[in-house]
Image (cartoon, rainbow, N blue to C red; front, top):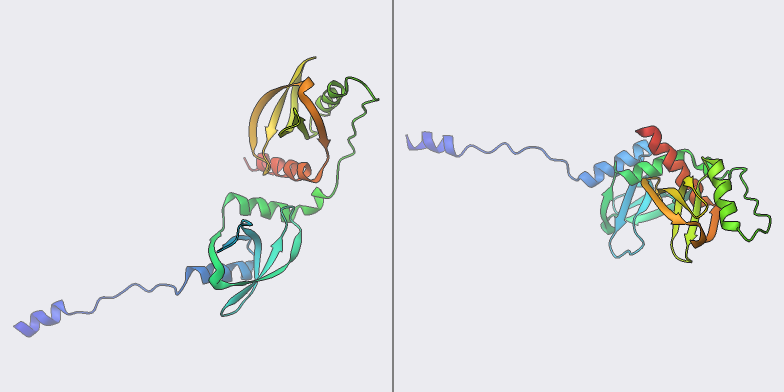
Length: 206
């Protein structure tokens, strides 16, 4: 009888089978499908690097880098032990997938130009022309400090409303500024072209 109960209670447990490493699975998937991932490394204050895995060895991976404008920036070899964590399927990797796919669009500025005619009222003239352009994104420096980027939605002789857009194309809503506070105007620079592309992409994704 004792042996009978011993056999019952001493049965070996069937442990679930587990993958050797989720990390390896993610890296292999990135390599096989050129899937964009974002890698954070130990002892690095430069933020994450974005791209896809090109090769995998026992200790290292080859990693195709991309700039924040979606352009290839060479292959980096990373020691596996230096990988702190990996982001994937998040907003930023999807942003980068969009930029990589449409990188050539960012290279092409629009034909829009501001004609100020050496006017003493250059801020007002600039705001009026940008308001009429409707789809033209612009960045304003306010009082020699921060830049605010977006589309002009409404103007008066003294102030204007800007539909502000964040660096990755997020719609930040509207803000009012005084025209006299404008100290610099930027139109068609590469950062704003990047921002415009992502803004249109987000609106199409809604």
